[in-house]
Length: 161
Ligand code: ADP
Image 1 (tube, protein in one colour):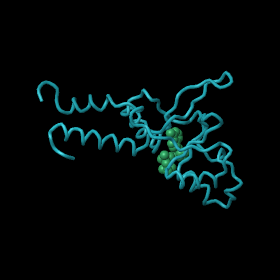
Image 2 (cartoon, protein in one colour):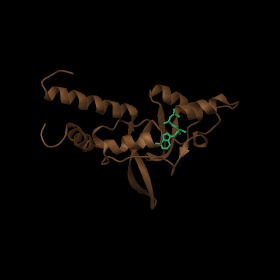
Image 3 (cartoon, helix red, strand yellow):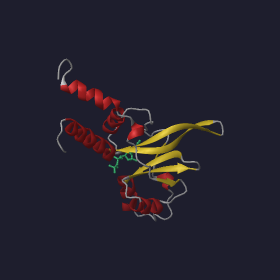
Image 4 (tube, protein in one colour):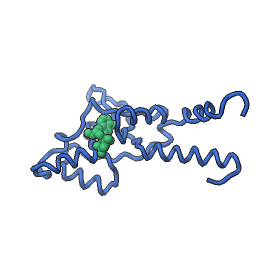
């Protein structure tokens, strides 16, 4: 390497990565769900965080494993409690967009100490600005990108990962 240092080249490569090229399919449930429904969905969809959406996939809330553990530990009937009571709701949800860099999304995960970001696009519903959920970025997404970058570098040098 001449001129630019190895680390500044690596940093340039990392900044080129976009959310849209790495995002996963989002795990969502209806805002009509009970806490029980969402616990089942968490297992069936094999995820740690679920997004709560209204008709048309509009983002209303986020629910994590710990949110569900906390409510399930109480002396309550989880069949009767609407998920809307438990979720972290809009406008307090940290999200990302397809065009954002994966690095910026990863920084949001770290800064806000969360495991998952919904990927959203703005839509107008009945004259109001809302966010439609179109994907997710999780710590797993970032780990996969890291592995891909590492494998790519090895292949360029004629080695195998
Ligand atoms: P866990 O609670 O299983 O450790 P997280 O660290 O992701 O999972 O969640 C911590 C808290 O932050 C939870 O109360 C959850 O509802 C909330 N949360 C998770 N993701 C987001 C997000 N993208 N925006 C805002 N709040 C979130």
